[in-house]
Amino acid sequence: MTWRGKEGKERRVRFVLEWRGVRGEFGRYCAEKRISRKTGYEWIKRYRGAGLEGLKARSPGKGVDAVAGETESATHGLEAHDTVIGQN
Image (cartoon, rainbow, N blue to C red; front, side, top):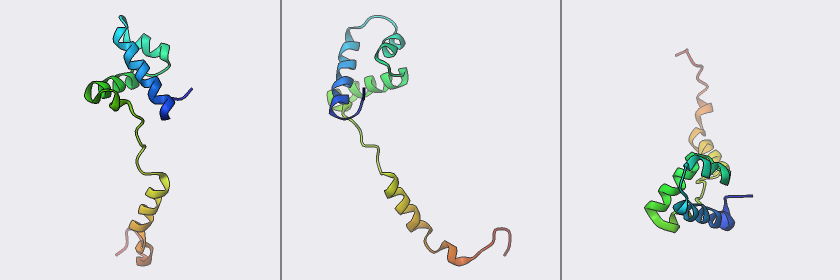
């Protein structure tokens, strides 16, 4: 059971729409849906801020490979200095 992709968006929408009719403890409702309260509150916040569009799956941002490439570019040439820490 996933909360990502198209199926995940449908489940997030169902979570929020069902929550609107639920009376009682939010934590218990989240536990029944097998998510943390923090995640539940985040989805409700996104729904209130942007409606159903706010429940779309979000890109995790840059992938590990992209970050590794940036780090390699940023550190390229540093080893050429042959500086020992603590020595001038």
